[in-house]
Image 1 (tube, rainbow, N blue to C red):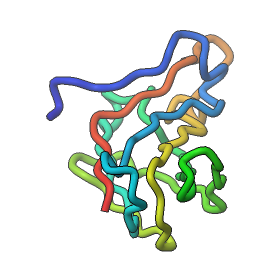
Image 2: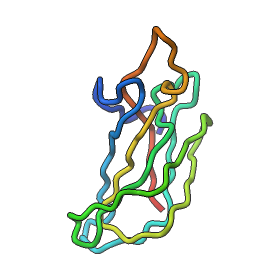
Image 3: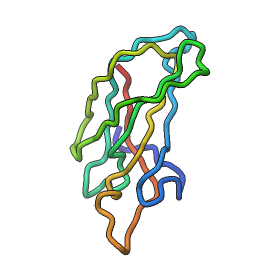
Length: 125
C-alpha cells in the first residue's frame, strides 16, 4: 500500500540520523517464531528524502523482555517495490525495525535538513 506510511516524530532524527524503531509482535501466542528475513518498501527519491536508508533488526528472545541488538547494518536502495533482506535466522516473539538514517542524511547541504524518517511497508519472513 503506497497510500499510507509510517513517519517518526519531528526532531527524532537530527540531520537524518538517529535510532527510531517500529516494534512488531511476531507471535500472538507468545511462542517464538523463526525469522529469516525482512522486506521493506520505501518511496524512492526524489519523492522519499525521509525514507529509511540504513537500518538494523533487533529482536526479543524467548521471554520477550531481553533484547538482542542486530549486528548487521542494512541499506535500502532508492527503488520502487519491496526490497528483501536475508537475515541470520533467529527465533523471537518480537522484533524491531530500527531506522538509523534517512536518504536526506547523505544529501544534506548547509541550508536543508530533514529530522524524521519513514517507510511504507515492513514484512517479516
